[in-house]
Length: 218
Image (tube, rainbow, N blue to C red):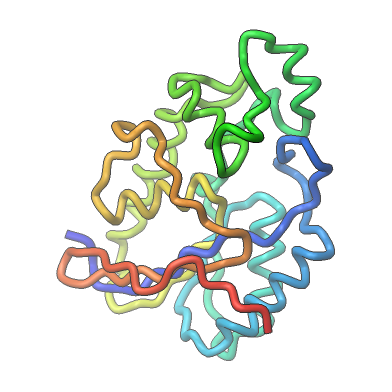
């Protein structure tokens, strides 16, 4: 049974990314993303976080650093590699046009077919796809869910925790809390908007979504 605690699932702010490209893992926040992270910090400044755990990718680290500046109570900050986004391998930073030439068997123009992030669109169309030199969905889910469960059981009862990460890894965290097998649901999309938070309360072994995708520019 999960311990009683409050978890704030926080997606990183907007990263630098040329239009039509897949996000490179090392990109920093854009100017707009920095402004978003400041607003997020102002929104959450009253939350008494005991700890914030973060993906080590720059867009999450930078979001965390800005957020913490505004918190009245300064929490412990820990980075965990298992919170990284799915490993895009050779897709990272490339345009759809380039990838279409390199992988002609894939239909990469999903603009009008599905809403949602590029990665989710691809994995809905090709649920068994493995990114070249990267991960597939099953590897990604196991890489996040297994250590998350272990971390969750480590003396977290009664705490308020922030998790700053990515749309994909936060989806796996949420579905783990809700006891839903994400792999059997063809990577369903719960869209975490950039620089938003979703508040989940764990109580008596059950997860309750208290707020979802909150971002109110100040």
